Amino acid sequence: MLSTMLSVLLLAQPAPGVSENDAARGFRLYSGADTTSLWRGYKQPGFPAKGWTAGEGVLSISKNGGGGDLITVSKFTDLDMSFEFKMGEKANSGIMFRVAETDGPTYMTGPEYQLLEDATYGAKPTDPHSCGALYDLVSPAEGKTMKPAGEWNSGRIYLRDGLLQHWLNGAKVVEARLYNADGTATDWWKQRIAGSKFKDWKGFGVLSEGHVAIQDHGDTELTLRNVLLRDPAAKPKGERLLFDGKSMDGWVAIVPSLKDTPHVSALAAVATADNGVLVIKGQPIGYIRTAEKFKNFILRLQWRFDPAKGAGNSGVLLRMVGEDKVWPKSVEAQLHSGNAGDFWNIDNYTMTVDPARTNGRNTKKTHGAERPLGEWNEYEIVVNKGDVVLYVNGEELNRATSVEAVPGFICLQSEGAEIHFRNVRLTPLPD
Image (tube, rainbow, N blue to C red; front, side, top):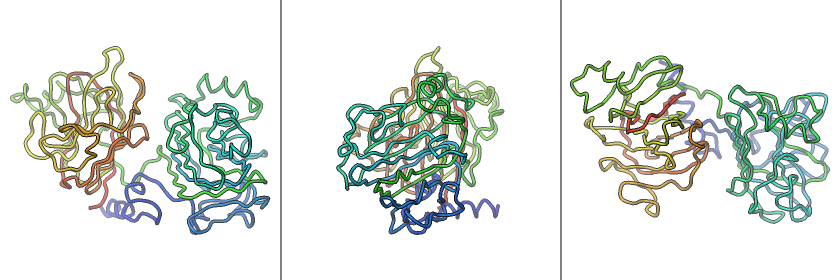
């Protein structure tokens, strides 16, 4: 009990520059004067003695400073890295991931998010060597925008379950599936590497984990700020499974048509555990809910609809209170195909949402982020005091504030279509 309390208290102490919710999600600040212990020089024991500077909230490299490439002390499997960057004229650098310390330089093992001052360098926006590209392998999408030299741009690298995304100034400019479910390189990724200059570089792009590296190109002025990193594959402190993959322990079935049926039979009628997957059948109509109430937490789960049975409808009900009925008082994180990330306010739950996207009880998501039918999607839902924030496949799609902060059940709807869940896990947050 004491260790659990300490884990929760640790989550309550975000570092300066990291919001409480981001700290709870596992992010850590990697820029600023007090972050030198998180970096070291490539093949060096500590932070470089020259070239690199960790100053007032920033991390920068001077032109011809001679510091060499910088790498994180920690290794990452998956990666969620956001940052702002400012470059001098003709600046050329890059951020590599899954880097190993070998006889060669960082770029011989780590794929690269290219950082280039396109305009003064003379690069076309969609060149495979231009800013935001997966260097020499995937060009940025058309329509990307960049600020001029000396002004701040924003970037993001998101690698999760084999899918890589590059973001530049709020727009997704690269998306590519590099790895299969077992961690091996996809055939497409192997072919891309085989047709590139990296083809003979042992280990390039196929390592299962590694350091994050920032390139010292020698002739570049580069400054970064608000550098936030986390490994979305890492298990947060205090995390617990709500579904163990084998049984329905800890869940209660609420099915109006089976109200006189014993609990075990009602639960079996609506949901089953099948080889690590929680299958909710869709019929009869109702929901399963946790036997325990939760107030402040991060809920992570993956879901998909069976393509053979078609798209469907379901939802995750949060802080459910009051009478068990269809449907109970709660905040719904929608799972209807094509609408994941919507809010539904059930039974006049106290909450504030964006009025421009709200029609009655429904608040539309800002944009779509679902995978094709049949692929696994991931929900990350932050329920923290008055905030409820919905992330679908790593993208924030909706946010509610001034939400009634009371303990309540978590429910998964059986709403007409078979839906599959896995990796249902919860990290408690402090009051």
